[in-house]
Amino acid sequence: MAGFVKSDFESQYRTGAETDWGYPNLVNGEERSEVGLNYIRAIYEPVLRTMWQEVLAEAFPIARTDDVLIIGCAYGWGCEIVEELTGANVVGVEVSDYVHAQKSGDDLADIDAAISAAGLDLAGTRAQQIRDKYHTPGPQITATVLQEDLLSEESRGRVADALGAKEPTIIVTEDIVSYMTDGEIDALVKGMDAYTEAVTKAHITRSNSRSTQRYLS
Ligand SMILES: C[S@@+](CC[C@H](N)C(=O)[O-])C[C@H]1O[C@@H](n2cnc3c(N)ncnc32)[C@H](O)[C@@H]1O
Image 1 (tube, rainbow, N blue to C red):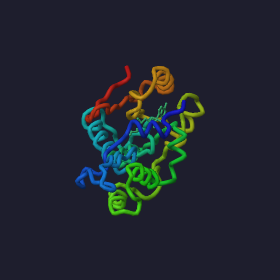
Image 2: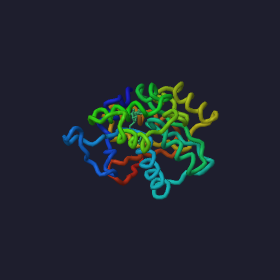
Image 3: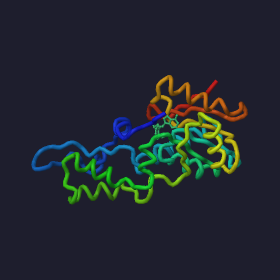
Image 4: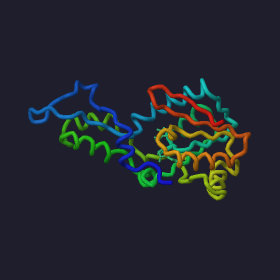
């Protein structure tokens, strides 16, 4: 199971980064495209925060005594948010090699690549404004994010170890099912079904601006 590669993050996530400053401006008298940023913390941490606030208020509560497994958490920003909002014990899993290769770096190279792609000078004022607003220093992953697919007992055992030798009480896919093939979903559900029925299992999606929740039957 491969998960997202770089181009998936680029095609699925794109936000104009300059609208606040009276975009468009010109390069050598020519109009240029707006700098577009992809999956970066400064933009998607607030999106995940709103989504999780809605999920906790409208779909299911999470108590500080819960042990939560978040599936498809990418850099684990949602794991940090759930921990902060609920005090629960949270572990994320993310299968993508790309995410794990990026985890100890920051987002500066991606931001500079987006600035250059729009034809802007990396030494210019606008480039610095964009970095000041959107760059987050430090590693991309600070939560506990394992590269596990949950398909074997060994994989589920490593998740239990990360939770402190405990099985999760809540398992949630975090906006992943609408990006997966039927075969991938079948495999994932098999992994989730290996956990007992006492465990709350849910799929969260945010296909529109507002999150919606769907539950496994
Ligand atoms: C659309 S992104 C969502 C990222 C993040 N959860 C969010 O809501 O911003 C879907 C993520 O799920 C991951 N993924 C896909 N299938 C997975 C699986 N079976 N187990 C864990 N992660 C998976 C992908 O690699 C990708 O990072």
